[in-house]
Amino acid sequence: MPWIELLIGTYFAATVYYAIDNENYITVPFLLLFVLGYWYTGLMSLLQGRFGAAGVSATTHTKPFPVGV
Image 1 (tube, rainbow, N blue to C red):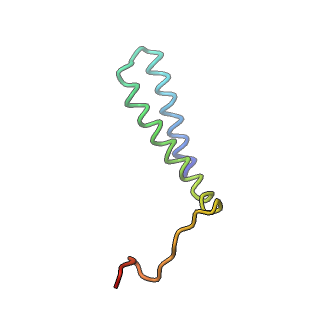
Image 2 (tube, rainbow, N blue to C red):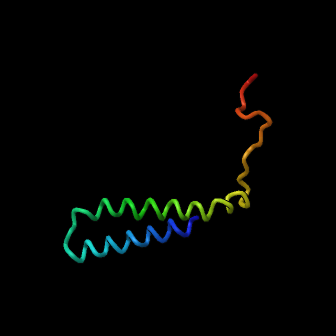
Image 3 (cartoon, rainbow, N blue to C red):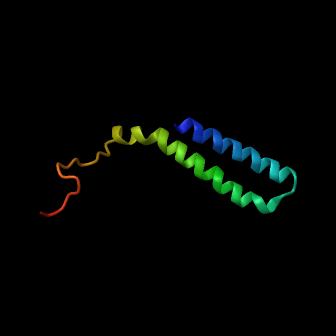
């Protein structure tokens, strides 16, 4: 569920603000990794259906792994 990932990313964004407000600057880069990771994953989950409508289509194969056999 992408909404949960976006909410967790927003929570970590609030912790970044809290860390800056309390002058705990050493933790900010690590917290930003969480923010960017959760937001990226959540947004890509939301937008994954839109890529198929934009003309990018995957090729379907009858074999599980397409090989030259």
